[in-house]
Structures are given as C-alpha cells and as structure tokens.
Image (cartoon, rainbow, N blue to C red; front, side, top):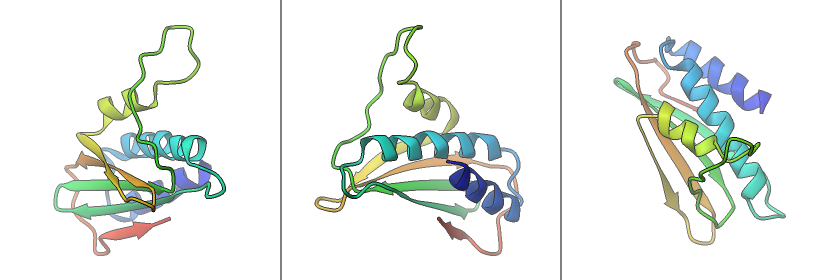
Length: 124
C-alpha cells in the first residue's frame, strides 16, 4: 500500500492539490486493499489512476475481481469492514463500473479548491 500512497501524494503534490490530499490517499488505500483481498486469483493486483479536471479529482481503482464492493455494518469489536464507510465519508461521490469478463473499476470523486495541473492524468 505504501507504493499506492506514494503515487497519490506525488501526483496530487505535482498538481498543487493539498486540500484533499489525505482524503484521496486514505480512500486509495482502502479501495486498493479491497481489490487485493477480494479480487479473484490468479489475477491479484490492481491498477490505480488519478485524473483532475477543473475543481475535481477522480480516483479509479481497477481489479479483475467479479464481485462488487458493498458496505458492511461492523460491530465495535470487528477489526475490518470499515473501508467503504470511510470512502462514503471522505469522497464526494463514488461508484462501480463493471467490465464483464475484465473485472471492475471503483471510482471516487473529490471536489478541490486547488488549481488544476499541466499534466491531467497519472497512472500507477
């Protein structure tokens, strides 16, 4: 996960985005972890992409798993199951695009106040 976090920090910093940096990084970490845990073998792994357009950053995480993420309602004693609750709170909007036979892409958007970049796309 540290590579994904570093990727997001470098991209957002290069774009001058500071106001939502922690939100984007934490959401990337949560969605990428879900991709690694729940994607079907033997195609473990994920691809992440960040794009910026005007006052909006879009994060996409693609994996080969067929299942869709769903919110859980963990008890206070549960040690997992809070990732999508964090995504709900920290992103402005999120959803899932299915790619039959080729997995899915979980996408999230974040409204920003920072100026846009010269290079609008980064991929991990």
